[in-house]
Amino acid sequence: MSHHNVIIDNVCYSYPDGKKALNGVNFEIYHGESVAVVGSNGAGKSTLLLSMVGILFPDSGEIRIGNVPLDKKTLPSIRQRIGFTFQNPDHQLFSTTVYDDVAFGPRNYKLSENEVKKRVERALEIVGASHLSDRQTYKLSGGEKRSVSIACVLSMEPDILLMDEPSSNLDPKSRRRLINILKEFKHTKIIATHDLDMVLDVCERTIVIGEGRVLADGKSDEILRNEELLDRCGLEKPFVLQGCPVCSKYKQMT
Ligand SMILES: Nc1ncnc2c1ncn2[C@@H]1O[C@H](COP(=O)(O)OP(=O)(O)OP(=O)(O)O)[C@@H](O)[C@H]1O
Image 1 (cartoon, protein in one colour):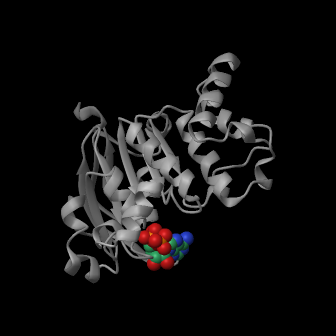
Image 2: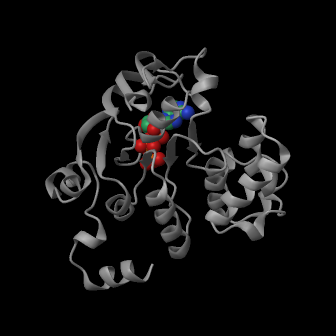
Image 3: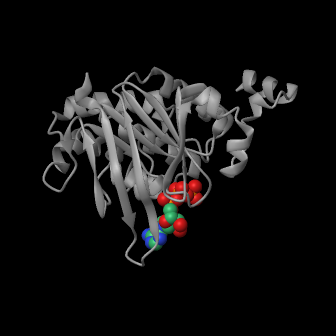
């Protein structure tokens, strides 16, 4: 199943103002893996994800998806296999209604309107947003927009899910729903997040990014227990590993 592996090969990227955001990033993600990308603010997580989906192109190094180098020529076919949610859902939602936003991906695949409708209804139901279908997107709350943006990628039925901060803005029930969606999604998942409790629940592997480089890469359970590493990277142990009975109870409730 190596055809879906994601390979990040010595990737460097500087923004036009000269800010070096990625400084030689290397890793390989195997088909079906569930991987968290964590790090402090400004570490380079979003820049890395934007590069993996071809919104930014590395200055040097290469990204390969299933052994196909990601470049302007291969981008349209690779994009069909990757579902990406932006850190800010306003960057994702641009149609007048929620239905049209969630239908945008399937319509691009030139599916019949009947099939599009089925996919939209299924995706909205999965994220618990069926009742929002006819609403105007710009009038939604932050959490509602987040749920709809997740429905937008689910309706595309991607092979690879890339998500930037998917749990931010979500209330506990919606966050738990997201965690269940991610657990159900059996293909490759790459999730940039500060929600380390969600990482423990969803991702078997964690890559720690700092100053545009990989600082650590290993089993989530080991990385997220390593206090010295977490402290060095500006991160904190997940609540559930801090041995707090209130937090453990909260986890059971949500
Ligand atoms: N459009 C831009 N122009 C210039 N610099 C940018 C731009 N976007 C991001 N940066 C800088 O690149 C670096 C990496 O930013 P990035 O958004 O990738 O970090 P991040 O790890 O996702 O942070 P956060 O956790 O705060 O979302 C930061 O120093 C940031 O200030």
